[in-house]
Image (cartoon, rainbow, N blue to C red):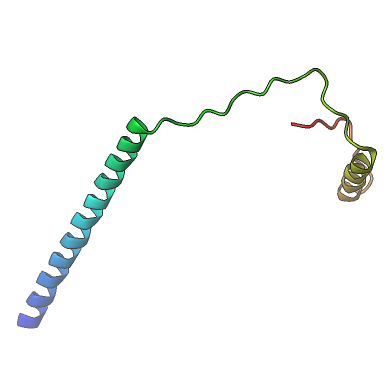
Length: 85
């Protein structure tokens, strides 16, 4: 019975050690995230103003898009509108 008691003690100590180390990692990670968010501002991308109408899609690209839709939908679908984002 002695080896079983020793094995259970080792298991409990090992699990407690792993649990405590994981808690330390979690709280250190949270504190690092808080520090970074506090002292390093997030970069804001400048807004790009749209100038009127977007450039038209080149004919060869429009043909490729239409062909792909035609193949995928087995000639049941059609391209109604293509916009550049």
